[in-house]
Image (tube, rainbow, N blue to C red; front, side, top):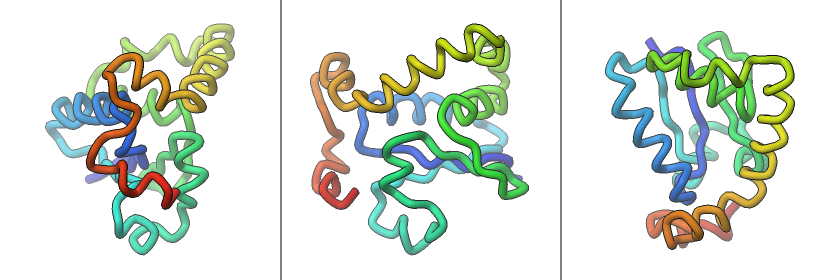
Length: 132
């Protein structure tokens, strides 16, 4: 049973790398990974605004509750058995600092991706970049 749906930017090389890692670890299928750049995304998820989901990572828990940003990251890694890796994201003081870091990353992730991977956008989503 899917416990979390993650709505991610399939055009961001760094984001795709993290999602690919999570997919490899999600051997029990607890997470559904949904690319907001997919041609049928809006038809399949009319309740999710792709432009908003492009600005901040969106997630949906099994009960329908929406979560955002680092909360999605925390739950995804916790569900694949890596809760200890991300527990620091829940510590009161560090949580605030991490939120600031996340907002910076989310805003500049394409530029950061270019620095890290040499690509600003993945080839599979480059043609859809204007659609968001």
